[in-house]
Image (spheres, rainbow, N blue to C red):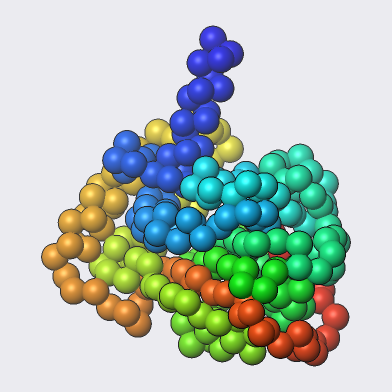
Length: 261
């Protein structure tokens, strides 16, 4: 029975981050995460060699990366040590590795939780090898979450500028959820917060009542109406530290907080 519960829990977690059709029924983030997973799947073959996952959380996308070594990094806190699947914990300022130690870096839905992104991007640039790849996702339209550690939303122009001034070359930039799906995803976010109770089983039952119809309408109308590249859910960026990268860091004030998964 215990093994069955573990398998069921593992399946549930997978469906939350890499959702298939069954997740239509219970995943209130389905519309956002199915698109995010699809775009990530197109880019993760660049996550080779030694890969550092910054703000790794439970490492939901590790299985997509053909890395020889995959290291998860998280901000050091009691909560993160208890709930996150990190290999290394750090102080949120200096990444605890020497220069040019990684062939690739992935940071998924983390940058919005970093009070001083200049400091983090300097550190990523430092630990990444020449020619190394950086895969970044960050929300554009989303509710406040993990409060109070939610500091920013990035437009495509702001994110591009931020990466380029830190010495990264943009290889490909995509906008995810740029259809009518964005409207229905916001409805599910609203309902998911408003109908939350202290009881897990009750929450799951309530989710099945509103999540499925909202998700279905989102998928259907997302195919009918044209895309809107000015209103979308997430930015997905593949960047590179060029072979002749400028090693001079961007100067910035001390950070008040580091990355969170």
